[in-house]
Image (cartoon, rainbow, N blue to C red; front, side, top):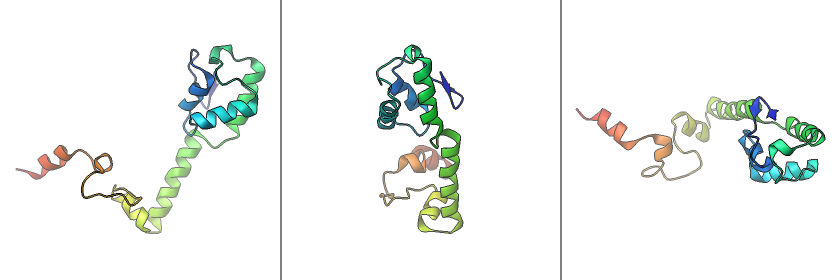
Length: 121
C-alpha cells in the first residue's frame, strides 16, 4: 500500500503503519481508522480494496507530507521576515518558546565539544 509515495510496511498494523506519514501520529491514525470503518489492528497486507479506498480518501484530503512541511517552513520564514522575536530566535537557531538557553538546549545549539574545540588554539 502506497500513500503520498511512501510504502507502508505489509507486516505492521495499519494504525502504526500510518504514523510513517509526516503529519500523522498514533491518535490521528486511530481516528482515521475509526472514521473509515477500518479495524486499527488489521495488518496492512490484510486490508481489502474497499477499506484501502476509504483510507486513501481520508488521508489524501488532509494536509500532509510535502505540503505540511512547506507550510511549516513558510510560517517560520514569515516570522523571520516580519522580524518578530520568535523569528529572530529561529534565525539564530535558539529555542523560540521561552526555554532556558544559558545551559541546556544542546539539541538546538549543537555539540559543546565542537564549539569549544574551534575556539581554542
